[in-house]
Image (cartoon, rainbow, N blue to C red; front, side, top):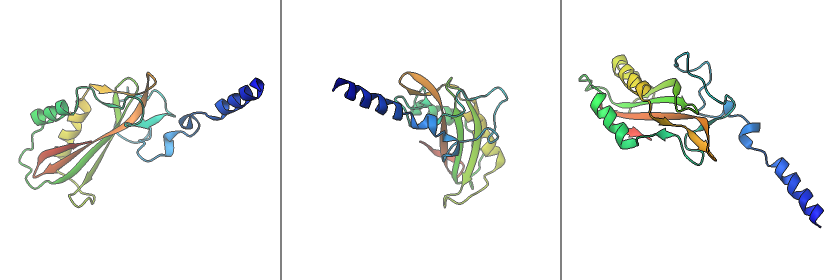
Length: 167
């Protein structure tokens, strides 16, 4: 009886492999490929085959100082330069690697009607540089090990002012 139970447990453990090891995230929605995005040449992911959404894991990927500090950072450093006619959403997507470094940035712009829109390039560049300069990122963790994840910050802009930062 013990041998049968042991055999069943062994079979189960061999077939219960990690889905993400077998089926890499390369084709999943949200992944930013190696040739996509804007990065420094020094940026690299730790596990090419395992880039998870930021909200997976025991400890999710996030800005270490918290969302309030993130908001304060943008309040203190963003200059709207009187872009009163600029409203909509600017999303900056990127990867946080297992070391907490960021790269492979991608910028998406939509109007308040959620249709593609072009904001003033100076406004977009300013937001991008501010995001790119953020350094206190926490990598996603599973059982104490850090992994790569993709993340995004969406800025709701009304008359040139940041009124909300999501998520």
